Every structure is written in structure tokens, then in C-alpha cells.
Length: 80
Image (tube, rainbow, N blue to C red):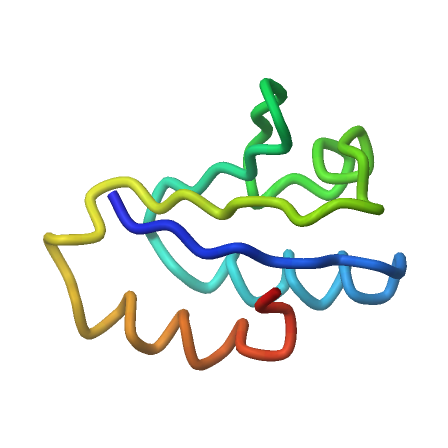
């Protein structure tokens, strides 16, 4: 599992983030404290406290490191 701390401060950021992560086949979750939602779900993300840093967790990241590297580059504007 690979983890990235991200910050999504505006609704437009959430939309851009979801568009990016939906291009990848990984199972991804966002964790804020004890709350976990699907990272590809706009409604799920809006249920989180977006005033705090959120952790992106990527399952099976070790299976395709090149795709994880590409994802990390694409979400760079959202990294905390």
C-alpha cells in the first residue's frame, strides 16, 4: 500500500482530483481520521472534513510502480 497526504480545499479541487484518479485502475481510498471513502467518489469526498489533510491510500501499488509514479505526478498540485 502506498500513501500520500493531500489537501482538497475547494470544490473545483475535488472535481479535478476525482477526474485524475478515475483514470487509474487502482483501488484508492481517502482517509480522514477514522472515516474512509472511495477516492473516486465525489460525494464520498464531500462527506469528509476538507479543512484537514486527507490521506490517499492506494491498494496493490506494488503491482504497478510506473502507474503509481504517474499518479503521483498527476496529483502533485494536491499534495500536502
